Image (cartoon, rainbow, N blue to C red; front, side, top):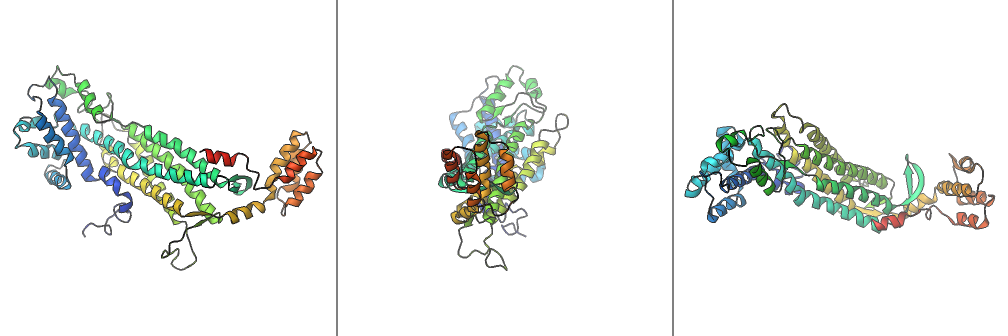
Length: 456
């Protein structure tokens, strides 16, 4: 069966391919091979520039350009040629080495340096840097811009509805009023902090041989400062240098990055569920698409499918990310191969993350606040003013203030404006305070909520 969006095993490569396509340039098999070529070329260039390696003289500017163009112009056809070699060698990184040798065999200057391609390297010297580049560049080019777009939408909604009073619900019960915008601003504040952490996590890299000690390097060229050379190559790729790995870079940075994505995603699960609930309460309506169907049997349905899709994919993403975070830093002795196959799921984890963020954004675009329903809910819950009344009573030393309001309102039906005004009239507090309390409504009892929402 030929591979297509209909025959793909995973939904990321099938149903949702168009939503996650930007990640293919970083996490596909083609992308991995391209990154390997890039690292191998940078190592070869660094060796040629090292005075202590006379057998590999410095490359001419023209040859440097040939090497750079090999990386920049690396194509899917090139990757297929590498895969053909891999079918013979049964080793993916060695296949890249052989492909590079073949590629440069007709270039006189590069042919002389053929034996220095992959010189003193273990496969992990190449792969760990590829994964660092994949994660770093996808974060900059794809993930952070997507998160910033979501944050911008939430911020706009927080500002738009900053002053729209809304009944809070603690433990699912009516509680002190807030504003719709303030509740969205709370999420913005959390996401901004999580976004800053996501942006600052550093993924380290190494290129120092079979067990991290430059063993073969020193035997071949004992006078070369190999740690300094390795640092120059790793940092030249924009990756933090780790001088103390085993055969593998221990993946602590990748684990931290996965945890940072989990934190963002967990906040968004909380948001998805809250918005789903507000839609259920009719605090929000959803913009209709003319030809869209909500239910195959109930024509009236307008389901909150975008937030449900987002929540579901965030759960899948976090399951993978949490496994990556706890598995990758653990390797038997100087290395085992369990990290190799697990690392190939990085793109899957970020794919479900990106898909979830996109679904959340689609849902946010459909939201239409329903002030009538929100106001009706406030007006049906005058008992929420028991809090400010008993607080003012405490100010003026009225005994058992809390207990008196508890007796009046707790578990009681039919608490109205008139009920509270009659109670306030009996209080031994200044007349001005009575007037202030009687002027208060559930819709005006919002404290600094509006100002806080506008300030986000």
